[in-house]
Image (cartoon, rainbow, N blue to C red; front, side, top):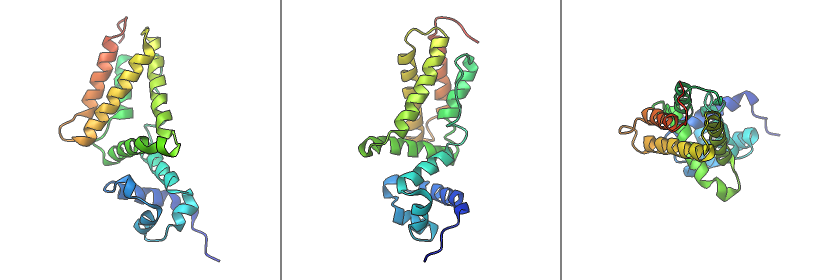
Amino acid sequence: MPRRPDPTLKPTIVAKIARHLQDTKLEDASVRSLGRVLGTSAYPIVYHFGSREALIDAVVDHLAVGTADRHLAPEASACELADHLVAVFGGLGHPERALAVRLTFELGSVESLDGRDRERRAHRGRVEELAAWCRYHGRADAERAARTAVQAARGAQWAGLVDPEGTDVDAALRAIAGDLVASLPVTIG
């Protein structure tokens, strides 16, 4: 009877796979190839995560610490809005943050093919929290404005991934916040 893997290895597996994915396309990462990265078979991955998708989700969760749990209060100021957008969508100068964004794009582009909606739900959540902010500050078309701002933020992220030297994602996000604030019917601080 084979010996069961040590459950304390799960965070180590996630960290190693995250480092590996820095230079590997998601489509090239199979359970077997990821097992080779660990210097073992696919068994520890299947044991700890159940599937490749669950492992990738764990990597995204690991990389998203500090951004996934951030929320924008409806009464937040203009400065707090800008800081929030930078915290949630920016910071691509850090390799782990850039990897998290890249994986989010890769997962989001194929998830509807396999019946998943994790990235779609996360996207909707960001739109909903920004719409609540817009409504609080008197914007009649809050949903449309929020959707437009989140799509612009995603566009800034994509530009930062495609052209990291030529794109200042954080400045673009602050500009998106500034445009949103400027379009409000009342002046806020």
